[in-house]
Structure formats: C-alpha cells, structure tokens
Length: 216
Image (cartoon, rainbow, N blue to C red; front, side, top):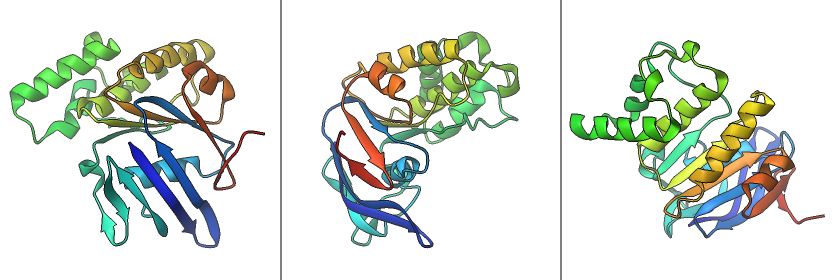
C-alpha cells in the first residue's frame, strides 16, 4: 500500500505538486493520468524518494518513508523505477545493465535473477548486446528487466512507451498488463494517453496543475 497525504513540492515559485492525497491500496496496476506539466512525474519521484516533499508525508506498507524529518533512501523502499527513456548504460551489455543493481547478492543469486528476468522479457538472445544494437521496444524491455531484477514490491513507470511506434506500443502495453496480473506487485503507471489508461484497466487517478482532480 502507498499512502500519500497532503504532499506538496515546489521548484522555485512553481508548485509542481499541490496538497496531493492519494492511496494505492490494492496490488496490480494503478494509472496516474494527466497532461504534460501536471505534476505526474514529480509525484512519482516523490514516491520513489528521488525528490523530497516540502510538506506532507508518504507511507509505504504503513511505514513513513518521507515527511516529518524522515527520509528513507530509494534503495530501501522496495521500488523499481522505469523512466520515460530507457536510460541504459550505453557501455554495458544488456546482462551487465540488469546485474548493475544486484551487486549485494551472491554471484549465484545474481545469475539466477538475470536468467529469470531475461526470460520474462524474452531477451535471452540479446543479453550480450549493447543498447544501441537493440530496437526501441527491446531497450524498453531491458529497462523493465533491470527494474524487476531487484524484485521490487512497487514498480513505478513514468510514461515508459514514449516515442515507440504503434506496433511497439501495443506489444509493450500487453506485456505491462500481464505484469499487472501478478498480485504480489503494485504497478503505478504514469501516462497522458487515455487509450493506454483504458487498456491497462484498474483504478485511474487524474492529475491537473499539481492536484488530483475528480472526473469531469
């Protein structure tokens, strides 16, 4: 469960997130939808611990992770983050990118996680490829594999299908919807596209000008 209570964040004089309260109480996919510059990405970064709220608090599984002088580091929050761009290390092969976040595990467990995530995203044959040798869709899958390899309870996805063509987008949407069927995982999916939101199903929260808004 993620509980966001009266959270605000400013950058200079600009209020990116304004007194947002939101609870994600069930596993599966929850969509946050809104136009560009509505505060969606900032809210996601606040949940991840990549930004600190100016006020309010965030709890994950009842534990306070942000607020009241508390800041739990991102790597202690049980999250995986998929950014708008794949953000793969260009000098590392696919396997090396996935293994990057697993340094604290034994070599045997690292290799087991690598095999499992490569199989999940169907990239076994591309594990020794560099990012520039992959298609756009394959790069996205590699980024998702890297996020899943740490076995997060919460997967945060910030417009992960940006700049994909129609066929690639449809393939990735089906894959993400299948991920959402795992009831042990929460997926918080950010988009501006109502077609994506409707396809993925599940609860939809709408954001505009830094606030959560009701359906119109």
